[in-house]
Amino acid sequence: MRAISHPRHPFRLSSHYGLLILLSLLVLGPLLYLLAQIFMTPDEASQYPPKLLPSSFYMGELKNAIDTVPIFGFIINSFVLATAIMVLQVLTAALAAYAFVYIRFSGSRFWFALFISTMMIPWEVTIIPNYLTIKGWGWLDSFQGLIVPFAASAFGVFLLRQFYMQLPRELFEAARVDGCGHFRHFVSIVLPLSGPAGASLAVYVFLNGWNQYLWPLLVTSSDAMRTVQIGIAMLQFEELTSWNLVLCGVALVLVPSFVLLALGLKPLVRGITAGAVKG
Image (cartoon, one colour):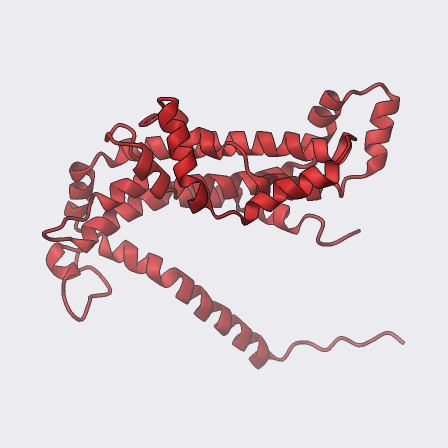
Protein backbone atom coordinates (compact mmCIF):
# COMPACT_ATOMS: atom_id res chain seq x y z
CA MET A 1 0.00 0.00 0.00
CA ARG A 2 1.08 3.51 -0.72
CA ALA A 3 1.99 5.46 2.37
CA ILE A 4 -0.13 8.51 3.04
CA SER A 5 1.99 11.59 3.66
CA HIS A 6 0.68 13.79 6.44
CA PRO A 7 1.24 17.54 6.24
CA ARG A 8 3.72 18.95 8.71
CA HIS A 9 2.30 20.41 11.86
CA PRO A 10 2.19 24.25 11.55
CA PHE A 11 3.65 24.73 15.05
CA ARG A 12 6.57 22.42 14.34
CA LEU A 13 7.26 24.13 11.01
CA SER A 14 7.15 27.60 12.58
CA SER A 15 9.45 26.47 15.40
CA HIS A 16 11.99 25.22 12.84
CA TYR A 17 11.93 28.53 11.00
CA GLY A 18 12.18 30.41 14.29
CA LEU A 19 15.27 28.41 15.26
CA LEU A 20 16.84 29.07 11.86
CA ILE A 21 16.16 32.81 12.19
CA LEU A 22 17.71 32.83 15.67
CA LEU A 23 20.82 31.02 14.47
CA SER A 24 21.15 33.36 11.49
CA LEU A 25 20.94 36.37 13.82
CA LEU A 26 23.72 34.89 15.96
CA VAL A 27 25.89 34.57 12.85
CA LEU A 28 24.98 37.95 11.37
CA GLY A 29 24.99 39.81 14.69
CA PRO A 30 28.72 40.69 14.73
CA LEU A 31 28.57 41.80 11.09
CA LEU A 32 25.55 44.01 11.74
CA TYR A 33 27.27 45.53 14.78
CA LEU A 34 30.37 46.15 12.66
CA LEU A 35 28.21 47.94 10.09
CA ALA A 36 26.70 50.09 12.84
CA GLN A 37 30.09 50.91 14.36
CA ILE A 38 31.60 52.34 11.19
CA PHE A 39 28.86 55.02 11.07
CA MET A 40 29.25 56.05 14.72
CA THR A 41 31.20 59.02 16.01
CA PRO A 42 34.16 58.29 18.35
CA ASP A 43 32.07 59.43 21.33
CA GLU A 44 29.20 57.12 20.42
CA ALA A 45 31.54 54.18 19.86
CA SER A 46 33.14 54.63 23.30
CA GLN A 47 29.89 54.89 25.25
CA TYR A 48 29.08 52.37 27.97
CA PRO A 49 26.78 50.53 27.74
CA PRO A 50 27.52 50.43 24.02
CA LYS A 51 25.03 51.78 21.53
CA LEU A 52 23.58 49.38 19.02
CA LEU A 53 22.64 51.92 16.34
CA PRO A 54 24.32 55.16 15.25
CA SER A 55 22.45 58.43 15.63
CA SER A 56 23.47 59.44 12.08
CA PHE A 57 25.52 58.17 9.16
CA TYR A 58 28.86 59.65 10.24
CA MET A 59 31.55 59.00 7.59
CA GLY A 60 34.44 60.69 9.39
CA GLU A 61 36.01 57.55 10.85
CA LEU A 62 35.83 55.78 7.50
CA LYS A 63 37.67 58.72 5.92
CA ASN A 64 40.22 58.70 8.77
CA ALA A 65 40.92 55.00 8.19
CA ILE A 66 41.60 55.67 4.51
CA ASP A 67 43.81 58.67 5.31
CA THR A 68 45.75 57.00 8.16
CA VAL A 69 47.09 54.07 6.14
CA PRO A 70 47.16 53.40 2.38
CA ILE A 71 44.41 50.81 2.76
CA PHE A 72 43.58 50.58 -0.95
CA GLY A 73 47.22 49.88 -1.79
CA PHE A 74 47.19 47.12 0.82
CA ILE A 75 44.01 45.70 -0.71
CA ILE A 76 45.64 45.59 -4.16
CA ASN A 77 48.71 43.84 -2.72
CA SER A 78 46.56 41.26 -0.95
CA PHE A 79 44.48 40.71 -4.09
CA VAL A 80 47.61 40.09 -6.20
CA LEU A 81 49.04 37.81 -3.51
CA ALA A 82 45.85 35.77 -3.02
CA THR A 83 45.14 35.49 -6.76
CA ALA A 84 48.67 34.34 -7.61
CA ILE A 85 48.68 31.75 -4.81
CA MET A 86 45.23 30.55 -5.90
CA VAL A 87 46.28 30.08 -9.55
CA LEU A 88 49.56 28.34 -8.67
CA GLN A 89 48.04 26.01 -6.08
CA VAL A 90 45.13 24.98 -8.29
CA LEU A 91 47.47 24.38 -11.25
CA THR A 92 50.08 22.40 -9.33
CA ALA A 93 47.43 20.43 -7.44
CA ALA A 94 45.58 19.55 -10.65
CA LEU A 95 48.75 18.35 -12.39
CA ALA A 96 49.98 16.36 -9.39
CA ALA A 97 46.56 14.79 -8.78
CA TYR A 98 46.34 13.79 -12.44
CA ALA A 99 49.75 12.12 -12.24
CA PHE A 100 48.79 10.14 -9.14
CA VAL A 101 45.53 8.92 -10.71
CA TYR A 102 46.26 8.38 -14.42
CA ILE A 103 50.03 7.87 -14.76
CA ARG A 104 51.48 4.55 -13.64
CA PHE A 105 54.90 4.74 -11.98
CA SER A 106 56.61 2.63 -9.34
CA GLY A 107 55.86 3.51 -5.75
CA SER A 108 53.00 5.86 -6.59
CA ARG A 109 51.07 4.97 -3.42
CA PHE A 110 54.16 5.43 -1.28
CA TRP A 111 54.95 8.83 -2.79
CA PHE A 112 51.36 9.93 -2.42
CA ALA A 113 51.31 8.87 1.25
CA LEU A 114 54.61 10.66 1.82
CA PHE A 115 53.30 13.75 0.06
CA ILE A 116 50.08 13.80 2.10
CA SER A 117 52.00 13.23 5.35
CA THR A 118 53.44 16.74 4.99
CA MET A 119 49.99 18.01 6.01
CA MET A 120 50.83 16.88 9.56
CA ILE A 121 53.84 19.23 9.74
CA PRO A 122 52.82 22.51 11.43
CA TRP A 123 53.34 25.51 9.20
CA GLU A 124 55.21 27.27 12.03
CA VAL A 125 58.00 24.67 11.76
CA THR A 126 58.75 25.74 8.18
CA ILE A 127 58.84 29.49 8.83
CA ILE A 128 62.57 29.72 9.58
CA PRO A 129 63.74 27.52 6.63
CA ASN A 130 61.42 29.38 4.25
CA TYR A 131 62.59 32.75 5.55
CA LEU A 132 66.27 31.83 5.20
CA THR A 133 65.63 30.54 1.67
CA ILE A 134 63.78 33.70 0.64
CA LYS A 135 66.49 35.86 2.19
CA GLY A 136 69.23 33.90 0.42
CA TRP A 137 67.51 34.40 -2.93
CA GLY A 138 67.13 38.12 -2.29
CA TRP A 139 63.33 37.96 -2.38
CA LEU A 140 62.59 39.83 0.85
CA ASP A 141 60.01 42.60 0.45
CA SER A 142 58.84 41.28 -2.93
CA PHE A 143 55.88 39.45 -4.40
CA GLN A 144 58.09 36.43 -5.16
CA GLY A 145 58.86 36.04 -1.46
CA LEU A 146 55.19 36.35 -0.57
CA ILE A 147 53.89 33.92 -3.20
CA VAL A 148 56.41 31.17 -4.01
CA PRO A 149 56.41 29.40 -0.57
CA PHE A 150 52.67 28.78 -1.02
CA ALA A 151 52.69 27.72 -4.68
CA ALA A 152 51.86 24.09 -3.85
CA SER A 153 49.61 22.41 -1.30
CA ALA A 154 49.25 18.79 -0.21
CA PHE A 155 45.62 19.45 0.69
CA GLY A 156 44.82 20.60 -2.84
CA VAL A 157 46.42 17.49 -4.33
CA PHE A 158 44.46 15.26 -1.96
CA LEU A 159 41.16 17.02 -2.73
CA LEU A 160 41.54 16.87 -6.51
CA ARG A 161 42.92 13.32 -6.49
CA GLN A 162 39.85 12.08 -4.65
CA PHE A 163 37.64 13.83 -7.20
CA TYR A 164 39.58 12.48 -10.19
CA MET A 165 39.23 8.95 -8.83
CA GLN A 166 35.43 9.30 -9.09
CA LEU A 167 35.56 10.10 -12.81
CA PRO A 168 34.64 7.14 -15.03
CA ARG A 169 37.76 5.21 -16.02
CA GLU A 170 36.10 4.38 -19.33
CA LEU A 171 36.56 8.00 -20.45
CA PHE A 172 40.32 7.70 -20.07
CA GLU A 173 40.43 4.34 -21.85
CA ALA A 174 38.26 5.61 -24.73
CA ALA A 175 40.48 8.68 -25.07
CA ARG A 176 43.59 6.52 -25.21
CA VAL A 177 42.03 4.32 -27.90
CA ASP A 178 41.32 7.44 -29.97
CA GLY A 179 44.96 8.47 -29.69
CA CYS A 180 44.47 11.14 -27.01
CA GLY A 181 47.61 11.82 -24.99
CA HIS A 182 47.82 12.71 -21.34
CA PHE A 183 47.98 16.45 -21.93
CA ARG A 184 44.94 16.51 -24.20
CA HIS A 185 43.02 14.20 -21.88
CA PHE A 186 43.87 16.46 -18.94
CA VAL A 187 42.87 19.69 -20.71
CA SER A 188 39.86 18.46 -22.68
CA ILE A 189 38.23 15.96 -20.32
CA VAL A 190 39.53 16.03 -16.76
CA LEU A 191 39.66 19.80 -16.20
CA PRO A 192 36.12 20.53 -17.50
CA LEU A 193 34.64 17.70 -15.43
CA SER A 194 36.49 18.76 -12.28
CA GLY A 195 35.20 22.35 -12.36
CA PRO A 196 33.28 22.17 -9.03
CA ALA A 197 36.24 20.69 -7.14
CA GLY A 198 38.64 23.19 -8.71
CA ALA A 199 36.33 26.10 -7.88
CA SER A 200 35.95 25.02 -4.25
CA LEU A 201 39.74 24.70 -3.93
CA ALA A 202 40.21 28.12 -5.57
CA VAL A 203 37.84 29.85 -3.13
CA TYR A 204 39.47 28.13 -0.14
CA VAL A 205 43.00 29.01 -1.25
CA PHE A 206 42.09 32.61 -2.10
CA LEU A 207 40.59 33.24 1.33
CA ASN A 208 43.62 31.70 3.04
CA GLY A 209 45.95 33.88 1.01
CA TRP A 210 43.82 36.96 1.67
CA ASN A 211 43.91 36.37 5.45
CA GLN A 212 47.67 35.83 5.74
CA TYR A 213 49.30 37.91 8.45
CA LEU A 214 52.47 36.38 9.95
CA TRP A 215 54.36 35.60 6.73
CA PRO A 216 53.79 39.03 5.10
CA LEU A 217 54.79 40.62 8.41
CA LEU A 218 58.11 38.72 8.34
CA VAL A 219 59.16 39.20 4.72
CA THR A 220 57.90 42.73 3.98
CA SER A 221 59.33 45.97 5.35
CA SER A 222 57.85 48.75 3.19
CA ASP A 223 54.32 50.07 2.92
CA ALA A 224 54.45 49.39 -0.81
CA MET A 225 54.42 45.62 -0.12
CA ARG A 226 52.25 45.44 3.00
CA THR A 227 48.96 43.49 2.94
CA VAL A 228 45.55 44.29 4.37
CA GLN A 229 45.94 42.29 7.58
CA ILE A 230 49.05 44.28 8.48
CA GLY A 231 47.24 47.46 7.46
CA ILE A 232 44.51 46.76 10.02
CA ALA A 233 47.15 46.27 12.73
CA MET A 234 48.68 49.63 11.76
CA LEU A 235 45.41 51.31 12.77
CA GLN A 236 46.10 50.38 16.40
CA PHE A 237 48.32 52.81 18.29
CA GLU A 238 50.21 52.34 21.56
CA GLU A 239 48.92 55.54 23.14
CA LEU A 240 45.24 55.28 22.21
CA THR A 241 43.27 52.92 20.01
CA SER A 242 40.02 54.03 18.40
CA TRP A 243 38.21 50.75 17.91
CA ASN A 244 35.64 52.06 15.47
CA LEU A 245 38.60 53.33 13.38
CA VAL A 246 39.95 49.77 13.39
CA LEU A 247 36.50 48.40 12.55
CA CYS A 248 36.28 50.79 9.58
CA GLY A 249 39.48 49.22 8.25
CA VAL A 250 38.07 45.74 8.91
CA ALA A 251 34.92 46.64 6.97
CA LEU A 252 36.95 47.76 3.96
CA VAL A 253 38.96 44.52 4.08
CA LEU A 254 35.85 42.33 4.31
CA VAL A 255 34.25 43.69 1.14
CA PRO A 256 36.39 41.65 -1.34
CA SER A 257 35.87 38.49 0.75
CA PHE A 258 32.10 38.92 0.70
CA VAL A 259 32.13 39.56 -3.05
CA LEU A 260 34.17 36.39 -3.62
CA LEU A 261 31.87 34.31 -1.43
CA ALA A 262 28.80 35.70 -3.18
CA LEU A 263 30.23 34.76 -6.58
CA GLY A 264 31.82 31.46 -5.55
CA LEU A 265 29.35 30.07 -3.03
CA LYS A 266 27.51 27.91 -5.54
CA PRO A 267 30.70 26.30 -6.99
CA LEU A 268 32.03 25.91 -3.45
CA VAL A 269 28.94 23.98 -2.30
CA ARG A 270 29.00 21.94 -5.51
CA GLY A 271 32.62 20.99 -4.95
CA ILE A 272 32.04 20.02 -1.33
CA THR A 273 29.00 17.85 -2.14
CA ALA A 274 30.42 16.37 -5.36
CA GLY A 275 30.43 12.63 -5.06
CA ALA A 276 28.49 12.65 -1.80
CA VAL A 277 25.36 11.29 -3.52
CA LYS A 278 25.54 8.74 -6.31
CA GLY A 279 23.04 8.48 -9.09
